[in-house]
Length: 114
Image 1 (cartoon, rainbow, N blue to C red):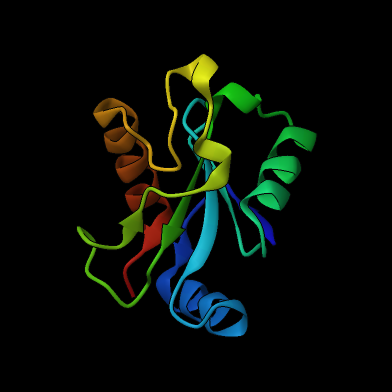
Image 2: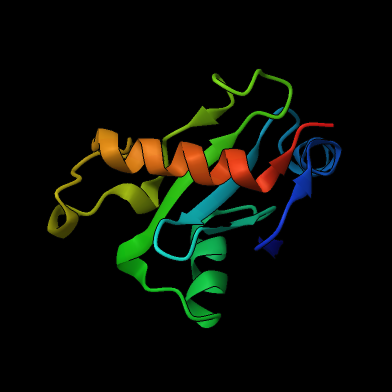
């Protein structure tokens, strides 16, 4: 498990995916700090890692990244940590289109496509 603050190569994400789940890697994105944690078995583990390193829970959203898919299909906005009525999100899926777009941009900026 690691915090990604700069570029991470797509082959590294593929290896992480293969090591744990096969075709995807779990990630938690901090939409305020424009960083993410990847490689945990649970989104909650990545959430904890980010909080221990200065993130605020209100800015954290769980996703799954499928490295073998194209850039536009790669992100699945689904995690138990996303259930947060106080943030207006009552499902595992991130309902807010603005938050989803922000996550898409952040993840796109952090992954090197090679």
